[in-house]
Length: 400
Ligand SMILES: Cc1cc2nc3c(=O)[nH]c(=O)nc-3n(C[C@H](O)[C@H](O)[C@H](O)COP(=O)(O)O)c2cc1C
Ligand SMILES: O=C(O)C(=O)c1ccccc1
Image (cartoon, rainbow, N blue to C red):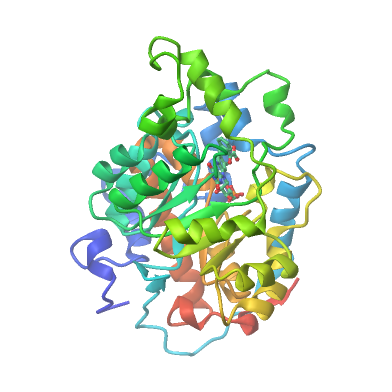
């Protein structure tokens, strides 16, 4: 990737993604200090599990019901194999991507994840700083433990999108949109698949709902429109504040006709997250949105839903030439990222793996995970004969 425009900003001194690998070897050889966090991305969960409380672990790792959809997400990745091509001059590489006007060093973004203080006290602030250090776009969850304003301050002028959970209180909705815009979040991601929380036995068996301890509702608690609906200030009655949130979060009545309202009140790109069928992808197109995220929420919502990766190729065939198609659910490694891109995703959202990095090392831990995945992606794509992410296509993979 000599001369790559993306090389310098991410590692300083002209280092490139795969130089990270050399750096890790050098660390071990010359200082006898091996990385404290594993480079085996598939093993991160195991390592992180040891640092988390049972409640946090249950909330983060566990999925809906029996976990069959989370498992299906992984099985779907294993059902595709990379078909490497040789002798194709891959010395100069550029994985740079522009995703709905947002520039990124590679087609990778940080998925919106709520309550990141469950993983580490610095929560979203550590994550957005890590994302900023590498130029990876960050998506701020409505259910974050830090507010729009705090995340914007920590992230500086780094690329940031906002993920909306549509509250049933319209004044709060409008206030969220205004605050997101004022604090520099450029694209709106509306999540469709979590109008109600899924059936999650790991939390139910513990009677664990973090929001009741006012965790993960900082955007609300800091919101003037939300506060106006409380009889007492948040500090005077935190439980009443949590209950007020619990009344406006569930929104199973949400429907396609409401998207026009969003368009009226948001002037940037709009992306719908949680699309799993060709029919809904076509509806998204008809309703004039700019992009979709093919996702089953990491298997956390409908136990028994199909694997997100299995839904991807048909959706790309149906709308990929007219909509930006993003993907998540089950991505664990740089090779997984390559497979999803080969099957037509324009970019991939990273979910649980960055949270494991956060749990293991705060900002440095998230940076480690991002560097590892980007380095592995660079190695896998170049070793298989590609000079950039944009060259990946259906011919790059075969059914196992
Ligand atoms: C702990 C946790 C919290 C999440 N919170 C949100 C959220 O607030 N908003 C959202 O749209 N998706 C949320 N997600 C889903 C992620 O954005 C993403 O779809 C999912 O993690 C992808 O699956 P993966 O973890 O298997 O990669 C959450 C996921 C996890 C693990
Ligand atoms: O846990 C989740 O997956 C999620 O999306 C969520 C929903 C509501 C509050 C916090 C997180």
